[in-house]
Structures are given as structure tokens and as C-alpha cells.
Amino acid sequence: MELRKQMNMSELNDLDEETRVDIEGFRTGTYVRLEVHGVPFELVEHFNPCHPILVGGIGLGEENTGFMQVCFFGPICCAL
Image (tube, rainbow, N blue to C red; front, side):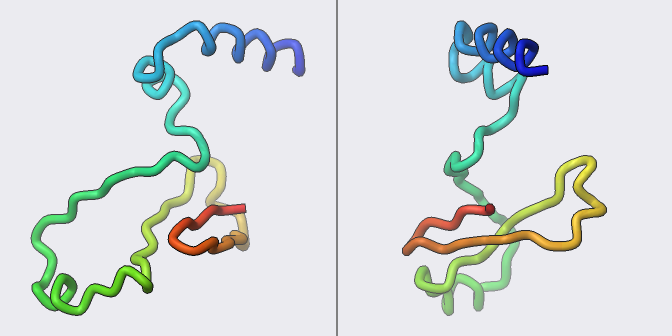
């Protein structure tokens, strides 16, 4: 299994970043910009960047997980 993982990593390292994201998906810790349309004006009017809006999802095969650990470091959030 470890040998297969090393072979996959060596293949992916030769690709440019855009192709790698298409194959592998976004890496953990990658920042994403979201554009949200059609939200109530109150969301914009009362938005406070000190209280972030959390957006997330559950990947395939993770629907049976009972909990998720999250830590906050200033403006940065990371799932553990």
C-alpha cells in the first residue's frame, strides 16, 4: 500500500497544479473564494468578519462519522 502511495505521489508531482487539482481535488488547507448570490440584504448589512460563516460538507464514505473536530486560529479555520 505504501509503495502504491509513493508511486501515485511521484506521478502527481510531475503535473501542473491545475491538472493535479482536477485529478486529486483540493488539498487540505487550500483557501477557496465563494460567491453567493441572492442572499437577504440583512446578511450583508449585519456581516461581521469576526464571526465567520462556516461552509462545509461531508465526503463520500464519511456519512457514518459521528463527529468532527475543528480548531480556529484567528481568521483561519482547519478541520482536524
